[in-house]
Image (tube, rainbow, N blue to C red; front, side, top):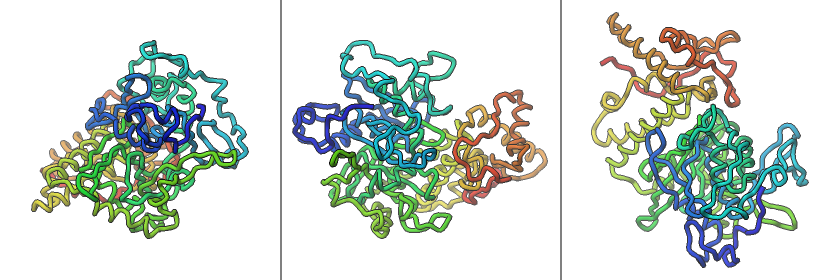
Length: 516
């Protein structure tokens, strides 16, 4: 896919001594440190059409700076590492599993291969099938484009809003990768590696290793894991500062499912993620497994190095003192508490603003993707923070709800992820959200006219069967609004444990409804 001419440990080669996008000539830094500098140099800009901020990404191609892609959370972490490795011709690979061939799969600078180095299945021969313009393009020249790559997508939810449309379908991941990479092989590879690898692979010690809390650095990835297989939440670290000795402030970004431009969380809003139990802390998941055994917590990329003619993913020499063994569950589970001690505690007002910002961001996502269970959970997590903050100020949960809750918080009530088929539906739309909220408002007006006080119906599957997807009431309401064509049938957009369940299961978390 790309040639490897540098090692991550290099500091004094011709390439290592050269100036880069975020470091001067003769910096003396190795490439891992330069990766940190690159992430730290990202610009924080307003998100397109949504609440909050996202990233702009500097490239090594003159002064070319690229806006944010639209990705799932694990995709963001993999995208960043692959992009940097390919820009600077560094080795990289991920280890996974080829379910068809029943063999270990390696995806990296060499393509998709098995243990013997043979190409797996029908994956492309990148070097012969696609072009690389790195040696021919010059700053100021027209950017080379690959029409076939531009038409590729990761899914229906990968639209990149700042790219101009050139056809019937809005531009997505393929068009973005075409704008990002002179080496078009990397664009084709990036799409495939993001489709085949996810947070389960990042929780695998073959790809990333646990790191002590005090060593947190840009490029690290915080993983939330509440199950051994299946999705989690992936939160890359982009900035770390130490405003006072031994106290740290951390900025993070995160994608979501369905995909979104990465949301930038500043230290005030990022702090809570690091103290969650499901980041490898004390406690148990719903199946009884200890969180510390599920791979969650602060992790760092293993470094690919050539040993006796074979590529090996290793813990670099400089990281060995801060690495935590996968079996050291005591040290792993101690980190959330330790983060609570070493991360800077913002003022009450900053904490309140951070919680409210996370609530607004989750609501915005739900208005675009009303089936999103991760956004429902993020909103309730933020409300839990807000309750604690307001209690410090002498306000009760009921008072906080009275001030800050909106009707949509009940409509998009939190569901139990592995027991609710709605959570597997990633292709719901903003038009559907409008129908759902109109149904709720109509329902409340009807209740009021009859002198009734009743909570709005939660948008979830009800009575699903082989002949009904479980969303009839909203589909019929769309028809009464003259918007029947806007409603989509349920689809299994990710592996779904709850596909056969009749009714979705509310989590039980959330406010008690009161009529005003």
